[in-house]
Length: 442
Ligand code: S3P
Image 1 (cartoon, rainbow, N blue to C red):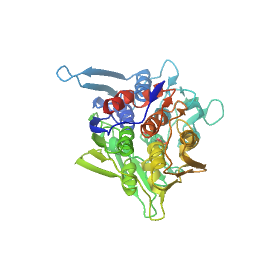
Image 2: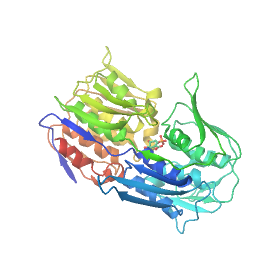
Image 3: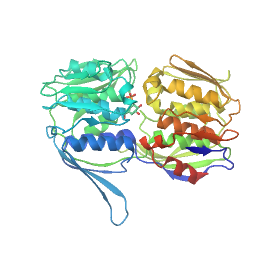
Image 4: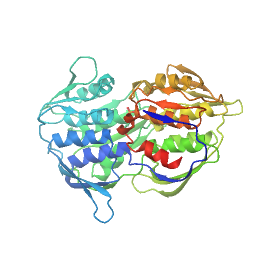
């Protein structure tokens, strides 16, 4: 349990957030399928990414961590065995709370010569898997939901020959896209995944760096495709993981919440398929500047945030929807918290995907905002937040959802009275040192 109160002084200084979760997962997976040893610095050692390491160790991949004896900086070594180098696990693959591990590994395992069983925790066993079962089955995979409820546990029968498909995904989901592309590495022809809007493209960027023939295409109507031509072998590379913008988002929000704040967040991944929160908050009047931008491979920058009063348009309204949504899907809970303090009504729409995250993030955000005194209504695909009423401390139900716990820790900084977050341990999923890092700034 953690108790937080209103911040009494501005948030000033510098902070570095841990490595990007999406990139960390992929670095282990693709490293395992590459020939040679992939090195990873900046790897996120959180529960989710450790689940990925655990699964690939069970699939016969040696993964080591060594600290540099001069600097103490850890490097992860993934001793890849090539695309056909995985071996049958002795037991079920357990993916914990990680949707990324569960869905991406399903794509890889669909193409193996051996059978596998995969499941995760109670939250994973409720999250939709039909979105990967359908396209992978279309490619020739034999993948079934064991309880016949379109959720994990999944059983995958090995020894199937996969063929390339063109798949029109109903959702802009990088997990779905990546599962199909990873299966496509083993297919006998090209694989194309078309999405309603471009979701995070870390898979495309990283697979290309490993030697795959893959690219994105953006169509005139805003739809986007990832196109993979199989046949190239993957070769080990050295990866430096930038800081996670989804973690940086909590400190961006903290600086925008507490008057007088000025905070520099160093070395954050700002790939435009992820950095929607920056554009949206700037449109709401936030003073955010990117410094030291580095465009090589995954774009990164230092983010300077100065306290600003957020607002809407001349009608005191602000709409977040459409193509903004996939670029900031994980940041919507903390943006909703900021919207509660803004001088406008914020409408979040086209975000029904929030319902199938680690918790139903429409209900869990709305219920907790209401508990803090906010005037907010849940809708089918988002929420309407009538900002400006002062927030009051409350007992927060995080639903064991890491991003909920962190979002409402930020709300607490702007709320009168005390806020209690009962399940603070859930932050281990993506940001184990979050509360220490937050305390260091207060
Ligand atoms: C992720 C993609 C997103 C995101 C998740 C990580 C990834 O999920 O919410 O936290 O690493 O590919 P969806 O693909 O389901 O939108």
